[in-house]
Length: 277
Image (cartoon, rainbow, N blue to C red; front, side, top):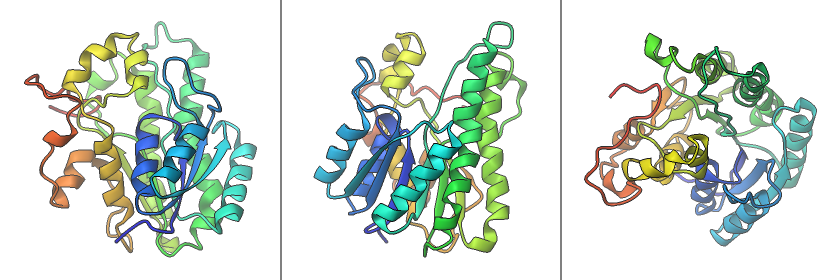
């Protein structure tokens, strides 16, 4: 099983986990639509749709870079149309774009909540809806969103309920779309890391303190490898699940998880948000 010739529409693919998923699929010879806002490299975060497009092609895939703000539903619809015309269809949508702010209700600017909601929850609906006519024509269509298992323990709401709401909304859409899109044969899943993932976004979302946590983190390649195992599954064999990265890898016989550590360290890995130790 392979992603050769498949077309993946990946939001937020200019860096981090989205970029790693793009490169993993590109090594199979997949077509990658890099849909993100960054047309020039961010001075701190790095990456742009064009730098990733070049990397995709160097890895063996075909690339189509589209500047896209996932909050704009008209732009999303147009981007899906352009992607389908460019590659002859769309087989997979990866809802990777995300926004994070760990402030609580007392201090969070409502405009920041709107931003998180629109980029996290709403964009999953908008992108999935816009892709639906093309996914219905695919032989093995998938929607994959980067969102966590639903854990209603109050500890996940006591400090950053607004962020939790927007991420859980993505997961609830996964559950709902899996049921709704069964008639179309579309596999719909969510994927979330068990441990902290070492990305520039994590580093700077924690005010620079995130870099100190990298020895307790894994590389984003673990998420790319886990996503790959989901996306090569056939006939809805994997669907309707809120999946933890290492769990799907172990299911598929990949048990050497030390390869994913950010660096060789004796420090205990840090469990990610919404995941029990």
